[in-house]
Image 1: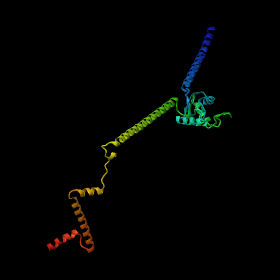
Image 2 (image 1 turned 60 degrees about the vertical axis):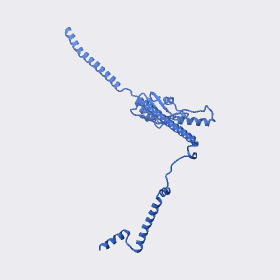
Image 3 (image 1 turned 180 degrees about the vertical axis):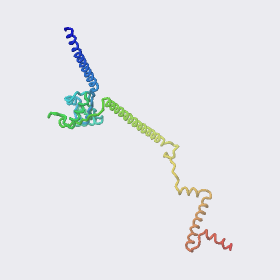
Image 4 (image 1 turned 180 degrees about the horizontal axis):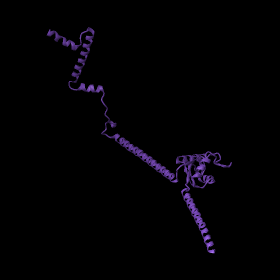
Length: 275
């Protein structure tokens, strides 16, 4: 009897142990699936663009203000151009009475802020856009509004490439301007040297009266005078004038007396002779 009861207990325990093993396998599979899902849903950083940066606003300020909404990574502000900076320095110096140490703050035109999670970046850009920057009354940026935009599928490497491209374009433009200025300077120096040579040759005895020599195209009267000065030229001119006058007289007489033109009058006698 005791052996039969022990066999029954062993038979009852075997299914229970099988069930426990199945539950443990299911739990391990769930844990592995969760780990795979977390690996697939890895944290992707997002970048927010700042279109407006007020004066005296620094990267430290934007980091302190936006860190309350999520973890902030890299921050970059684009400084003003050299021409604008020089104009501001000159204005500050003139306002301070020409003092060397005048109060001038380096300002920025635009900026980029990287968040560790792009979902946080989207939420921050959607909620803070067109809202006051400073929450406190004494904040110097209380009357400035956030101008934020989330850059979809934009990474920090894209920003680095864009900045490098802008620097290269700026260098090429500067190189082209320097080359153009050098060409203009060389042309001016060559013109000055040519003028000096002309002035030095002004007293040359080979030049008539020391003046500039140039050839001018002869006029119509000069051409006629040259033709008349040739041997027999006057006679030919006189005969040509007489022929022109005779032609004009024949036409005039034909119009007055109704006579046929000179060509027809020359042809009529031949017809009379034939008759």
